[in-house]
Image: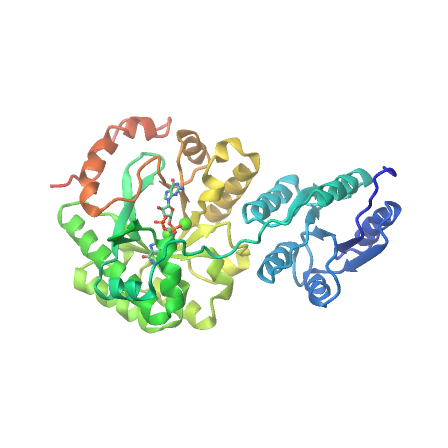
Length: 425
Ligand code: C2E
Ligand code: CA
Ligand code: CA
C-alpha cells in the first residue's frame, strides 16, 4: 500500500455522517494525501467546488444526504461543468450503487467506481490508481449541427410544411400486436436526404418559440390527420408525439391541441404527448399547469428518455404522467449488461407501482425483447420490430409483422386472439 507514489494531492469527501466522513479522511491521510476537504451534503460540496479554490483531484460522494443528495450533486456538477473524478460510496444495497454508477457512466460523467461502505484502504488505493489514469472525458455537449444547414432554409421548410412525420410502431410486448405509433419528424432535404430531428429540432428551438411551435404543431396536425385515416380503415392506433419543453410555458397550447383533435375528429385518449425527462427539473410552474390541464383533457402524458435526467420520484410525481419510456441506453444490450439490467428492472418496478404504462425504446435484439417480457414491460419499440417509416409503408410492414407474431409472443401466451389487430381495408 505504501509504495504507491506519487499520491494524488487532494480529496473531497462528501458525507452527512461525521463518523463516516472522518473515517474516510483518516484513511486518505494514512495514504499520504495532504489536502483533505470535507462537505456535509451536496449543497455544501457545490459551494466548495464553485468557491474558486482549485478543484480536488478526487471526490468520494455518499448517496443519501439531507438537503442535496449525491445524485443531485452529480447532476449539478454536470450542469456547472465541474469535472472531478468521483467514487460513489453508499451503505445501501449494491444494486442501487451500481445503478447510479452505470447512469453516471452512460451520461459520460467521470465516475471511477461505485462501492459499498465502509470504505477500505484497498478500495481507496485502487480509486487513486484509477484517478491517476483518468483522462477527462469531454463533458456531454448538446448535439452539434453537423450538416451545413442554413437557418433560413429551415424557417422556409417549416413555413412550407415540408417537415413530415415518419411513424415507428409501438408493440405489445406480450403478444407482439401493434398498439400505436410514435410520430418522428423528418426533413426531406434536396441535398442531404432525410435530415433526422437531432439536426434541426435544436436549431428550431434556438430560433425561438415561433419556430419550434410551428414545427411541432404542424407535425401533430399531420400525424392526427393520418391517425384519423387509419381509424377510418379500422386501424385504431394510439398516436405518440414529441413536445419540446419550450412549448409548455404557453397556456394556449392546450386549446391548440384540443382544436386539432376536433379538426381531425379524434379523442384525446388516442394521443400521448411525450416530454423528455431531462427537461422536467426546469419545468416552471406554468408548465406544470399546462401539463395538468392536458391530462385533464384526456391526453396521455409520457416521460421520454427516462434514466437520462436524474429525476427523483418526487419530481416525477409532480406531473400526472401516464407512461414511462425508458431510454434506449438502458435497454440496448441489457441482457448482457448486469448494470443496465438492474436499472431496467428497478425503473419498471417503480413505474408499475406508480401505475404507469411502461415502454422500452431502442429494442434491437430478441434477447433484450425476452428480458423485457420477463420484467413485465408493457410496450416495446425499436429496430427489432421496425424502424420509423412513412405512413404509406405501414400496411406492408404490418403484413410482414403478422408472420413474426409467433416469434415475438411471450412463451406463456396462447395462440388465441392474434387477429384482433385492425386489418387495413
Ligand atoms: P425520441 O423521442 O427519444 O425518439 C426515439 C429515437 O430513437 C428516434 O430517433 C428513433 O428513430 C430512434 N430509435 C428508435 N428505435 C431505435 C433502435 O432500436 N435503435 C436506435 N439506435 N435508435 C432507435 P429520431 O427519429 O432521430 O428522433 C430523435 C429525437 O428527436 C427524438 O427522440 C425526439 O426527442 C426528437 N423529435 C422527433 N420528432 C420530433 C417532433 O416532432 N417534435 C419535437 N419537439 N421533437 C422531435
Ligand atoms: Ca419520443
Ligand atoms: Ca426517447
